[in-house]
Amino acid sequence: MNFIRSLRFKFIVGLTLIMLPLFILLYYNNVYAMKVVRDQVSLTNMNHLAKSVEQNERVLQETNRYLYSLGERDPDIISLFFLKYGSGDYIIAKQRIMNKFMTDIGFYNLIDSFFLYDAVNDDLLLATSGNYDVKMSIVQESMPVQMQQLEGEIQKPEWSIVRGGTWNALVKTVRINAQFYAGALVDMNALNHPEQFTESGDRGGAVIVGADGGALSDSALNSAQIKLAAAHITGLNNPYQVISEVTSTGSARQYLMLGIPSAMSEMNYIVLLPEEDMMRNLPFFQQIIRLLPIGAAVILITAMIFLRQLLFRPMNVLIRGMRRVSRGELDVRLETPASSELEFVTHSFNQMTSEIQHLKIDVYEEQLRTREAEFKQLQMQINPHFYLNSLNIIHSLASLQKHELVQQMAGHLADYFRFSLRAGKRVIRLDEELEHISHYLEIQKLRFPNKLDFVLDVGPDLGHYVLPPLTIQPFVENAIIHGFQRRTEPFVICITARKSKTLSDPTLSSVLQLSITDNGVGFEQEILERLQQGQYAEDPGGQHIGIWNVIHRLIVKYGKHAGLQFSNQTEGGAAVHIHMPAQTEEEEGRAYAEPVDRG
Image (cartoon, rainbow, N blue to C red; front, side, top):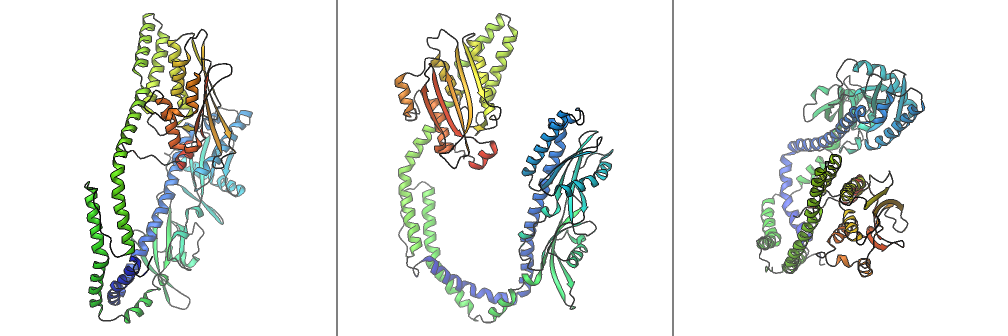
């Protein structure tokens, strides 16, 4: 690319000519520039400080909610109240609470420790990521004060400040019942983030101070600077303050002071920025300004004409062409300009409009196919024949006065269609999918008494893994529809789930394997060969719409990491095997973005 003909070179030359007159204005506005610098630096750093404080306060509020919910939702903590102190069950429950606390510390990034205190037996359980002895000592010393504050009062969300010599912390304690208190500990240094503030220089920094003006966190500021900042805490309602420090030589050193009081505790977040570091470039600009030519007005006019011919006119032509395309005129073609960059942009624009003409019909047809597949899938989810048959069974059972079976049938039917209304989610848990399948099969068992049974062979630790909704049901329905043919003995469907390690793909830590098997007649050889060859995916509008829908969603979501296998068992019956990455809801949310609804 010819650099002299490039837009970059021409824009640099033109921008230089435009900026020259601005320095003349700066010569007469040096004082104003200092105020602008203060405003901008204070605004930037105040935004950083406000964001940091907001994040800290949010974590503290979430921790409050977490602590208040322990007495209502944690079965182990509730059970301690009824278990004998020191018994085996009591110790096991404490260990589970300890494990839960250690896990939850990772979810709350600011929290240093969680603890549970037994006031009756003076027993303290502490889970911490730091020095255990120091944290244990701090909690034990602060518990009498914390318990006294909670006695006879409504529990408040505020956090108390505890001092531990060289280590200060925030502590929050809630009363669960008459015996147990739960709480959390936060290292003050974890709340202070001095690295995010700009223009702090060697003499600036951030610190957290208490209501008495004492420092609560470590800081790059010295004691005199902290004392100076503490003396101006009352002015924190201003956007910023300019404060002065008298040095040992008798000269004054000015600082820009920013601060935000905490809503969760009696403390203040303070930032000091030395003004001389912020203003260090202004003298340099003043020297340059004195050297600028007087004839800047003529240069500015020339630069504007230059940019108009070089940039603005070609860009206006391009913008007019884009507006015509936005109105549906796809036959727009632009003339090639002189600049090499705009020449490439114009060529790409002309090529794009040409390709859009060819792609428009293809996109429209693809949308029709997609809507048709979605519509057929909805039809499969709520089958009117299945619904009417279920109502007929309920009517017959009611006529025979089998009220218990009527209740079971109605309950399963309600849960079945309730899940269908929720099946539009991106993913669901495996145990939710299996619960839906169980309702479906229980209804089928009432339709075919003594002729149908099912087995769910799923490990207790697999239910929290997620998969696309209605992944298993199409294969269960196909098994009942086709596997019942010529049956003289009970028909049994078995659904198994296993998790295995993967060695072939280093990007996956484990794989979730699902199997749907039965003891029916199995697949016909011709159909089995077609399924094994993947021909169900070639005709999404055919009879294998359910299978196509499942594999299409798996491939779109997981790509090569998911798949289907079909086979006949040696002892008789069909088998379908599904594999996909084993992921929890949190892992799935990080790995796959939410799909855009283009409906």
